[in-house]
Length: 384
Image 1 (cartoon, one colour):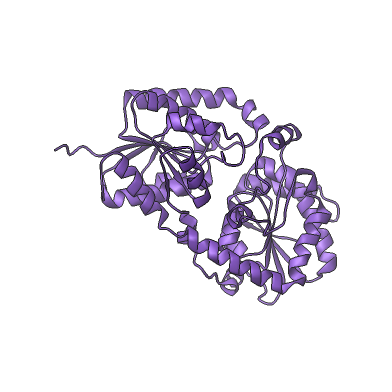
Image 2 (cartoon, one colour):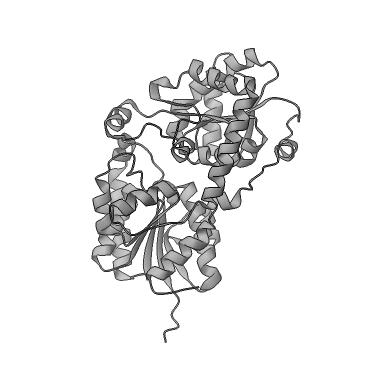
């Protein structure tokens, strides 16, 4: 019997994937402590012992036009990784999200008889549904975070396992708003709005102005409104501060570094960019208004490809338009401000959303990292 440690190739493309990867690594190491992980990792995965062959932030790019501008660099990184893993085959390769990067890498490795897993489904159920044929060819197993995704793959005969979402395991069913406010030095009795214009440069570029204009209008309607803004890192803070300096009659805001979850926990209402933050807000049971804007060319292409009515995770999981979402030209200060104000004026609506969000939270609370580890180890004939 071989005593060689298990080797895992693993690639995460952004912060949310880094957290998923770190939790997965920790779960696998509980069973196989000497396991080796290498590929592309962020700080959380590196802390768990993963070796990163390239900086993760080189993969963190969104939008068709934006990706094209970095195509040569991304292609080069993928080629080098493919050669590395072909020359040093892992027991299994795990691509975490970043489908436009990872699926191409998985195809090369799968063709070289290396087992491949794709963790976090691409949005094939929403747009570019033809990709499911490629996923079938290049992936031995898809791990989905949401149940509706698993149903889609089953219909297309793709091996799939619904594992739930790790955030649903981490975030408690009831959050403590007062404790969060004390930690952030916010008044306990004030009306508080959390403002999250995104964690990427292009998100702040497109959403900061309408968000700030909406806040200026809201402060006229709610004079005592406290607005708090978490910034993902020093680069995003500097970018947002520059935008503030160039905003006439800029509203008074409280800026904090990181702590986005605690900021949302402290709030009565959240105004945010569509993405993982919307899922976190939902798990914190926070009423929210969701917005998103892309470059005009990217949006023009995407609108012909998208097959679903809603784009935000809370609405997709609810199966209806439970929270307001405003995309592209609809993300105006007037629309955003009025939707936020409607929550403050209608406590009954907030109560209903809290109840629905609690039900969804329960459905996603599956001990996800443990289930993902089980599925991956089962694929390579190992068990806990």
